[in-house]
Each structure stands twice: as C-alpha cells, then as structure tokens.
Picture 1 (cartoon, rainbow, N blue to C red):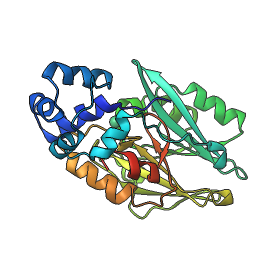
Picture 2 (cartoon, rainbow, N blue to C red; picture 1 turned 90 degrees about the vertical axis):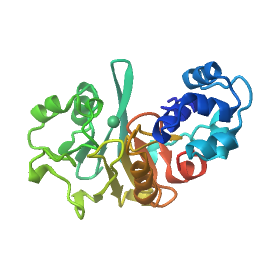
Picture 3 (tube, rainbow, N blue to C red; picture 1 turned 180 degrees about the horizontal axis):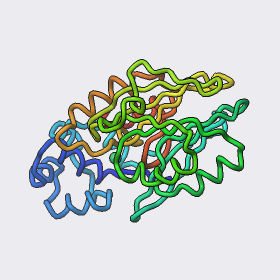
Picture 4 (cartoon, rainbow, N blue to C red; picture 1 turned 60 degrees about the horizontal axis):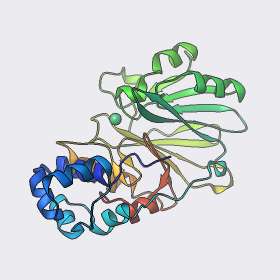
Length: 273
Ligand SMILES: [Zn+2]
C-alpha cells in the first residue's frame, strides 16, 4: 500500500498547520513558487531542497523530510503475527479508507474498528469465520470512516457501538477507564483529538503468543504523516506524542489511511513526530 501522504502532501499539510504562505515556504526550500506547487502535487523535488530551513519554518524534522524524499516506507507488516487481526480497505469517491476487524480465535468474539464505505466484505468475513460481532468501535465521525455503519448496525443489531461523539447516547460513549474484554483480548481507549474533535485511539492488548499491542489510531497519525488538523495542529501533535508514541516501540499502529506502521517506525521517520 502506498503512503497516504508523499513528501509534497507533508509539506502542504505542514504549511497549512503552521499558517505560512507558500511563497515563504518556497523561499526556505530554495524553490520558485511554481516549483513548490509542483513538489506539493507530485512529491518529487526538481533538485535537493533546503530541508533544514524548511524544517525550522514548518516545525518538521529535517532529517525525516529528507528520508521521505529518499523514498522511506515502513517495513511491511505480517499480520499473521496477531491472531486474529485483519485490515480491510474500501474505496469511495476515489479515496481509500481502512477498517480493522479483530477477534479472539477461541471464543470468536469480534470487534470492528470503523466501517469504511463497503459493508459487504466485512459481513462476508464475519460469516466465513463464524464470528460473533460484539462491538463497533468508531475512531472519529468523518464520513469515510462510518459510511457503512447503518448497514452493519442493521445486520448486527446486538453489536454495541462505541465512540467519542458528543451527540451519542451516554451508553455508546467511550469512558476514560473502559477496559473491554473480547475473549482474552483487552481493549482500552485514549482521546486523540486534533484531526477530529471526537478522535480516539483504541489499544488492543494481551494477544496470543505475546504479539505486540495494536493501536487503531484513525486519522490521528499516518505512516510518515498525520491527519489534517488545521487550527488544532499543536493539540493533534501533542496527542500523537503523549498518547500514541508513548506506547511500547513494537506497538503496531493501524491508521485510517495508508499502510500499517509501528511506534518505532514513526519515532524514527515521521517528520511531524
Ligand atoms: Zn478523518
């Protein structure tokens, strides 16, 4: 899976977050305004840019910008290590979005994290694996993440809904100290607002064979980037630091868009971190 954000997307997001004019960014990079616009669109600089000046201007780590420019990708993850965890990607309006289904392999109790656009492959997997869908966890209320929710609720009316949405009834809202059991798995939550006011990260632990924790982060963080958080970038970055990157280094990070990554990968390579 390609990165959700290439170098140009990261620079574009960085300047929107920092509230800096494109001409100022172009000057720092050592490019013309037209060249910067082309880099933001393609991700490919026409020549080496001044990453140190860019980083200082936008609050991004220069060496990690350079890493992105050099083609960094997170190491591929073998999901077979987690029993059981599946990534399902659906497409709507030309945009791909990830959702995640996980279950206890003994009890077959399952939880879905976001729905994406298409209920069909999720329903097929639930049926094929003889799963008992207990929970629908929502990372935030943006349309691409909940588009298939009505159909899933209709097909699995007993599945309990959980989100940070203020408009949700109290019994469907996450509480800070929730620890939900799904067979032998344990699911907790941490508030990660910024990209969305109701943004929340779910952490799943106690996997068989000591597989690392799994954090389903929604759009708080992408491999090598973060969700757009214009007007709330400082809050978003603080939550990434305090609530996500404080998890153990091998923790698997499951973003709403783009490839899987880990805490260690993002600490070493994400320009926003
Ligand atoms: Zn979103």
